[in-house]
Length: 373
Image 1 (cartoon, helix red, strand yellow):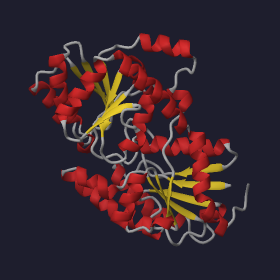
Image 2 (cartoon, rainbow, N blue to C red; image 1 turned 90 degrees about the vertical axis):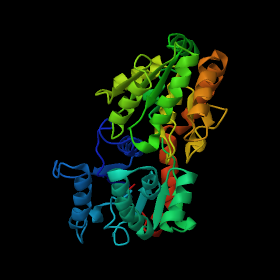
Image 3 (cartoon, rainbow, N blue to C red; image 1 turned 90 degrees about the horizontal axis):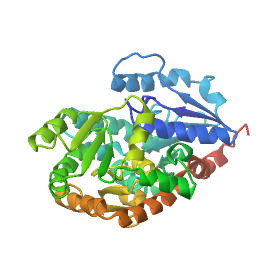
């Protein structure tokens, strides 16, 4: 089967989004199954603005997919969030819209320009979803929000979770090697990896760490990532006098450097109030880190509370501090959650996700069977 992925996201995860990594992971898994997957991306680097480039990409897509154009050579076309909005409902090939984070919901957790931008993009995502014969999404939470915001009937919705590259994130499956790795961790280091948007609520983690460091002076917090909140978070660290216990590293240029921190830390924490899935939690669990997060959005679907991590109410730094201290001061609890987390993350390999994707699109293809195997 020949599949087109319409993808105007930045390909560099350090600059763009986990969405780009997820699209690439699914494509690679489908290729391993013998399918052909082409990621159709913006041509060139104009416009320089990511937002304008995404809009221009979609504006010019119909010219590439007109009668006798590229669409005739594909068995399936998949557009991600806004991508493909001008093809939905008129594509000559079977078309599916894939929504990895409901923009209408994400916009409610932002402010200023990011909020206005997401609200505008949500109108395009709504049109894409409403006109597509099939809408794929990553969690039960997202499916509920798509129905609420976009009015898509449940019979046109299908759940396909995100996945991770298990070979990349699980350094070993040998018990002795894992025990040696865990013994070399920094027992009081907490790691946070995220793009620094307001909805990630990293400010709550910094506020919580004022309590954590007072109760456990050996505790250290390492935050990796950049974004519109970076300056605000840096000021917050200075205001609270946490310069010695909190490090904001910004975006690291090499993904290997990020993975190295997963191997050094003992706890992972990201107290988001909005996540359509949360690939970063799977990466943390696969790396051997128990998770502290919140009960918001899709997080409980990815991080079962008390099994692989501890969840607290969103926007509650006091509860967050209590959960972090509980893990930092209880090595046995960390070990139990860590071992369960590795097993849990192992269920989200890309090959298994690719199987679910193919099951989800099968009814769509049954209407117009693939012309290639």
